[in-house]
Amino acid sequence: MVEDTLKMYEDVYDGDWVERKMEDNTLRTLIKIYNVMAFASYFCKSYSMIVYFTCKAVQLSLRNGICEHTPLSLIHFTSVVTKDDDAVLY
Image: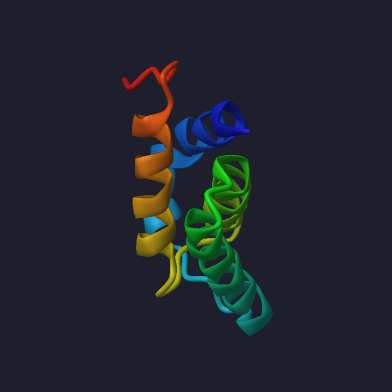
């Protein structure tokens, strides 16, 4: 799932992704829920759930634009990528 998210990031990086705003309140709420679930998974010590919810939040932002919850999603994603022993940072 991390590899898919990194690939999606590479695909939209050069585009106008940062300039697009997420207008849909339902999607913004969903990203917030994903962030909360990733945070709760940390305390449950479930690394696979942290990865899942973090990647879903980042993928949603990459597809639909940024909102006020995107920075936290990207911070979570950075911690997931750097914690992974097989992570390859470009």
